[in-house]
Length: 126
Image (tube, one colour):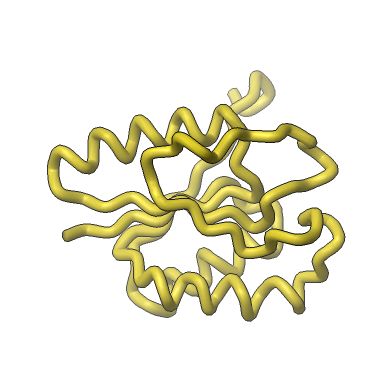
């Protein structure tokens, strides 16, 4: 069974809706989708998502502090440990701005996993 990990800094309602739809589609073709977030909360986006009814497994690397309070050197071993435990075949990485996202890309390439980078498009991109 193909395993897809989808990494965001923090899962809000938008992310949950999108990954739920991906999970539903992938489940039909016997693929497994797992959500991973760097932290359960962050100051930049203070949304509170209801996790009670999500249809996919969601792993929060940091549960007890906001993302901005965690230093990269503290996050990196936890991130890599989580990726080793999940053992995804494909890693979907939301953006390439943050150090943790670049570290996830490096981990994916180092371990022979297929990385998919998501990026925002703006008017100035064209």
